[in-house]
Image (cartoon, helix red, strand yellow):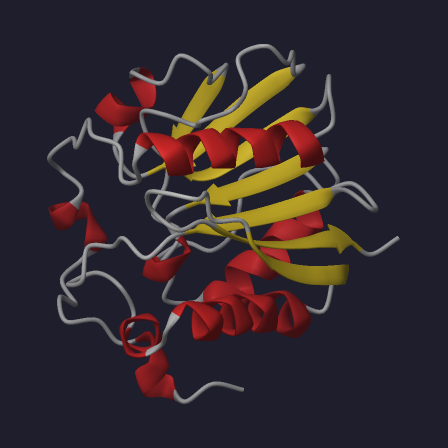
Amino acid sequence: MFPKDYFRRMDERDDEHFYTQPRLVVHIDEHAIARTTNLFREYLPVGGRILDLMSSWRSHLPTDVIYSEVVGLGMNATELAENPQLNQFIVQNINNDHQLPFANETFDAVIVTVSVQYLTNPIAVYAEVGRVLRPHAPFLTIFSNRMFPSKAIAAWRSLDDAGHAQLVANYYHLAQCFEQIEAFDCSPPQGDPVFLVIGRRLV
């Protein structure tokens, strides 16, 4: 298990204070967004029910693919309401309340996009993701090297890109409900880097 200090942050105030102000900006450039969209096109099931965890005002899902439902869970209601790809959204601080408000085996896929660095209890959250996923459904964690340093955990700030990928892969392993866990450098030829860790819910 990880040392406790791994998950300390420079700003330990309640996250609600930090996320009160909507931030209607994207956190990766257009090249990284395009690569992220292509990863979703490749791995997310057409017609599936998708949970966009730690969501914001953009999900970067492909606009030419139809999903039965996209549910967003995030910190700021204004941001979530501005997201045109969400069918519904829930405001919840999963650093304080790890339990996801969904029944077992609700979703065909779950995504976390450029936000994993802010999780202070990632193993509990990843275990919850496993609970709400259907058997063999994919869980994609996509990240770059962009962050709000004051809210990123200490481990994230201390590691390089390869270290980030190993850290996130460990979250999947320690949650004990995923298989086929793989990490990929999916960075475009130019622009911000893009990395993917993916696992599938145990059958």
